[in-house]
Length: 242
Image (cartoon, rainbow, N blue to C red; front, top):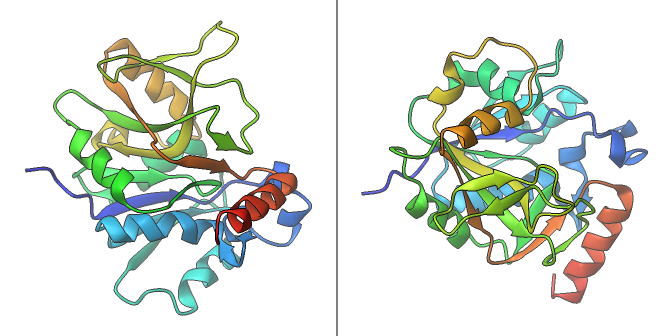
């Protein structure tokens, strides 16, 4: 029987530099897309799949992020703040710092600058079904770069028939982009020195040991990293019934 994660870590500490001037007075996760904060758009499907406990890291505009969860947020959901005001830890260091808060069972980890539509939790259920902790350290949700809005990169990964991942490396393009949500064993970050570092360090090591896997997103992916992307996402959602 598959374990349903009850804990998720939300990476909400970024500076939001590319989102300026919108982030001069607010945090990127609180930017609203059609009157819904970005962070709420990722929390909603996680709650629907059974997550009841969120560890949220904070740095830029940390007071506003914390206040967001104190102003009438769902009463049955536990929010724990991992404070990075003194030092921003990056996507890997954030997990090392928060390791004592994450428990030992698999958890979801999510960015706040992207979401999918329709935003139902079936995709997360599929990730749970596919995750095998015996052979996987992390399972990344991947978007088809041609089925997305707001993504301007050249792709991150090649996805093998067995779900194993390889980095784009020197190739000019790769067909799959990391969506910003993954399922992992927190123990892989538990013994890391508490220092700022990118999750790419752990991914590269996991690829070398054939322990980094990917699953394709069967939905439209919206990456919201710039003010223009905010406008584009709002228009796309309105055209599709929101």
